[in-house]
Length: 399
Image (cartoon, rainbow, N blue to C red; front, side):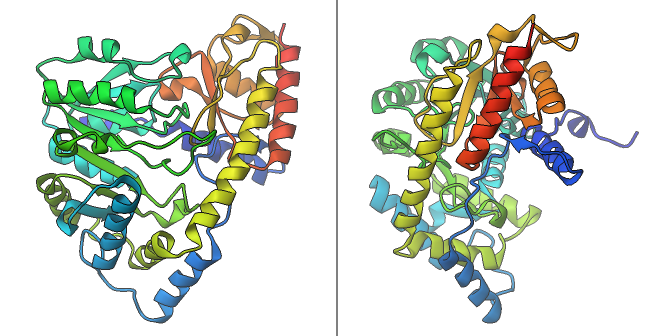
């Protein structure tokens, strides 16, 4: 009876719910194969962990500047300059408690009640919830499997209204693994300039790209685009540091200052020890080798998963170019039954797969689509093989 209307409108994260259910079943003794997790299964590199231990031993356990320690901001600026050719001043960079907080800070400081935010669909589960929390209205831009799930100019433009304030770009993409080309980003940038839209570019998976593809940031496409773009990134995925909760963003100084002021009243500074660990992650010479070995292993798993799924009658998928997810098309299983229960949507598929075959996947409805479930290949090849064996058996048992 005491909940606000805002609180009543919040939906729990379906991806975390699936992972939680799988872990609960494992703790109860069930042999569950989990394809739900959105985090690398590799340990945080030892040189990063050592730097955190040193920080503790040296007493670096007090408050820090709200927007991050200066040396970490410098390291972030250096990375942007080295990898993207972009120049940012310290006042144009903020460090937060994960990339998700950067997104929330940004949307809170940009979006007025009633403003519309364009979001690619299928979408990462938190985008619409964050927009709604900030009083905005999510507007979904349909993408299609035949287009590698990428937003197209002729689909975006009709959705732009006088209320449209922001467009979110996510490349490499969660949940689809799509990677945008320079031309595709130029089309989006042209619309943003013409209609005076702010761009939030979520690039958290920028290091996890395969088949010789290249990560291109939309912020690199000219001064007009740079001046209206906030890049969001972090150390969670590339350095297997999900639990350390360090994200960062870079963009127009006015926006970043507002985000920092807002953060000062919500969480204050990000964890001091984790900041030192993130600094090590971004500056240690071993970092490139650590990323390269992880990407190589992810690529092997991806290749196996895609090939195997496309060999199972009734299932299919396209090969993602980035991140560590596969969107598996399950639409041909709809209308079929397992033990008398009819599969009519992604939730039915995921529920019965977990209950009867001990495999956890994320139903596509979590991302706004019913025809798919998402599988993460951030698990061992042995688990992938075992899990796909069970999925094949499940689909063959449908009648």
